[in-house]
Image (cartoon, rainbow, N blue to C red; front, side):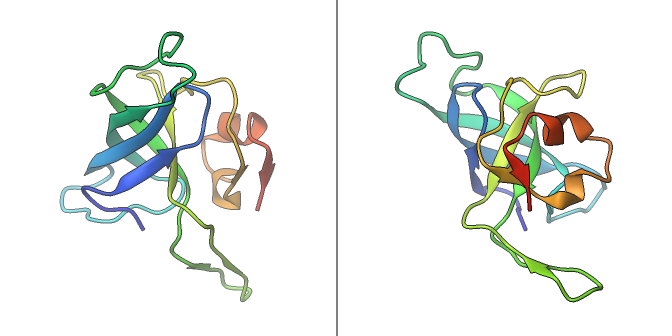
Length: 126
């Protein structure tokens, strides 16, 4: 679960390294976000190698799609999934990815949602 002020790893090739959650979208008093949910993030750090060629700048505000969380997710069939880190992928205003590639696997919850584009550009599903 991701809440306000959570530092997230950006796992795409947009040029950002870390981002901070500013707002959880999807409700008036919503406090937590799970994989597949949208949040508003601010870019905290950039990757060293791509500072010149980066698509984003430090301090910019983007929407982000949560693709991995440390919190365990239990399904009805008894399957429990969790990852080693909290990761987000950046989204532009047209709800399409800023990057052209997602590094690492994504949660299977994205497959049944409206974000099928993120599943196709990722490394795999878990």
